[in-house]
Image (cartoon, rainbow, N blue to C red; front, side, top):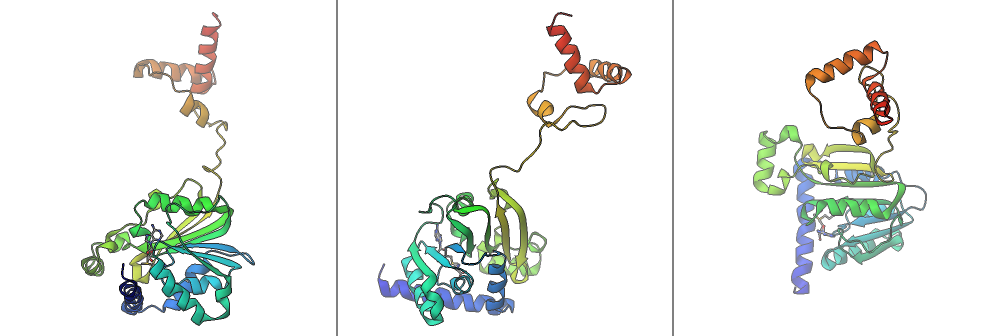
Length: 270
Ligand SMILES: C[S@@+](CC[C@H](N)C(=O)[O-])C[C@H]1O[C@@H](n2cnc3c(N)ncnc32)[C@H](O)[C@@H]1O
């Protein structure tokens, strides 16, 4: 692409962002500070920003971090972002810019304290992958904050929602809660800018949440998560099931305990 044209597009994008915040009557700097605060950054934190664009969040991240890796697919957006940081002054020293695809990050697992993204998720070819990549490169216990256009569910049929979708179909997107990685813990979802953008934040855990499979359930059915999920047998007639329930109750056992005993005795030939 012609560099002058690409630069003009990046500047046009920047102007569009000024207009967006003006439309919602929201103080952009204050909101971006609030979003960055959700990262709960430790002293000297190493932060990854994906889809950094023209650096409108990077300047806020830079004041709170040790090092910010500001990444974007577009070198032109990054160039404008660099200029913005240079204007911001001393904080620029802690920012490293990099052209990188948010859905295939060139960083090793757990190499950041936090990851941040705002405004580009709806453009990702694979949103699940983009979210998974942020969680992968953040260490366990670290934080991820991300958001994009997506009118709040209770506003989609309102005039507010319809007007926004009419101007920009991206407002039709929904918060991608179902695409979060299983390692996401303490997930919070809120809507900002009048309810036109979703904002997700979570802490990175390890794999699926812990679950004790062997705690015995009280009551007539009994058993545990393990016996119920992994120990399922083929069904019997409802009538026989009822007879077994009645017999188990009479013997003072849960259904699971009675069945296990009866089947074990049968297998032992008793
Ligand atoms: C709407 S801008 C948001 C920029 C900035 N975060 C902000 O809030 O002003 C979206 C940015 O995401 C970038 N982007 C889109 N798809 C991407 C991808 N797969 N990987 C990295 N960046 C991407 C675009 O180049 C663009 O700069």
